[in-house]
Image 1 (tube, helix red, strand yellow):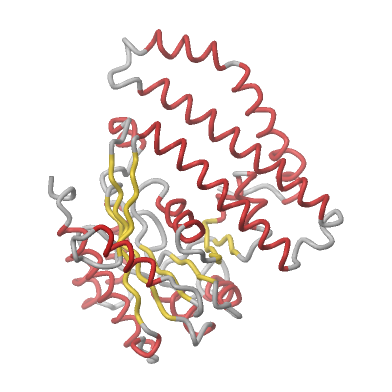
Image 2 (cartoon, rainbow, N blue to C red):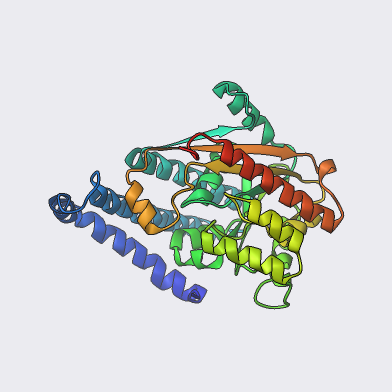
Length: 355
């Protein structure tokens, strides 16, 4: 599915989300009464009212961001100074505040908690302190995360902005430009909306063009920056996992295909984007991110069944010094695969995964 041109997104979709938010808020008494009346017909713990409330909150959140960024656009001289460091920093601060607000509301409604750890010591204070040390500002980072479960990219960016004090450079799927707030905000900070590609290196429609875009984004990382990438290329699903394995076989990479079959919770990583980022940021260390708590939420039916989620999300980080990253591309691809095998093993060892 494509996205409309920028001018349509700005003068049609952005105002539309504001109108939708106002209408949804004005109709709150009506839909709340109807939702409560239907609760007896819909199994679950007030799932329908929760969903409608979260939809209303998200629309209001999106609309609020659109209005705030319109004010920043005016303040920048109708866009003249938007690319200056001060305005970029202001957009990062706005995004961090907005994500804190969103997770405060969603966390309460869905009963979600997020725990960050940088070690397996089992002591919460020590584990959290270890996590903070991994992200200490002063050196650029390439952050490579698994991609499993709804909203995990939001959780990661929220953590980087509000807990790690990093300014993320983000790689996103192009369809997210349908969301006006995400679209506008991430076109004003360093980011790239891409069309995901497989293992191919075609000159168009992905492949080398994507890698070139990622290399451009990773160029010039500062000491407080973090280039964020999801090497799996998409949320884990059974169909996508099997397709990835078959593509490896079709490419003549039988050994990699066999290793991919052994992975239970992650997919085979696609190395092209990591190669591009690491080559463009030769001084950057690498931080790998694993998380668990959202693994069983794959389809809309899964999410509906789990509401309210009552979940504790654990985010585990490891930092790899740049000196330990192979320079040879084949060796680096194997190294990346080794790390995703380690992430897979960590997820398997978590009690909630085996519950």
